[in-house]
Image 1 (cartoon, rainbow, N blue to C red):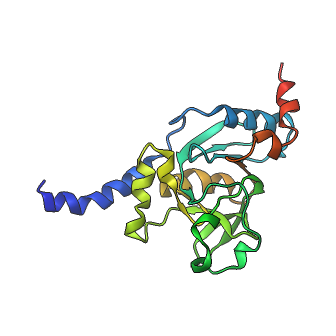
Image 2: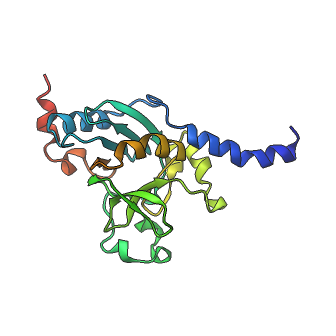
Image 3: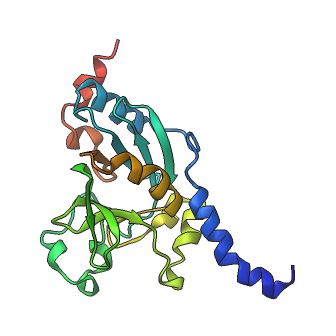
Length: 211
């Protein structure tokens, strides 16, 4: 393959790679992910629904069925800025007015609510008031290198969005959407600037009860 053909093929190769980042067990679960999963099941916090655990420090999302069985995991893109809370009223502001340090993916417990964005694309709202959703990765601005960021092993590369959770197309279409559509799935977003126990106050006592 000559250089010109190789350069032309790179975007397609990156897209295929981004679509393939969803093998079950592709990455080990962090201690916090395992702890949150155990807590959700033992406390029945997931209310018999499938659930998502997002580890922002790893920039990785795990999908579980209602019984806590792993259905897959994938790297994701997150808000550019570190932080665990959304700026008050940010969901009502034009994107162009949102400053870089305000582009956070909020931590907490949310419900995945099916909806559509302004372009008519199907998405899952995570925090409607803050305009934070899970959606397919959109490589619309070449300079942002979103597909390339997904393909690298460094989590720090994955901070680029305005706060939304960008999911590889293959994982979204083959795993996430079929699991959550028509259900009230729970989305747990782990904190990165505060202790896990501060956000999920009962987690220590419940997990400690495991025989």
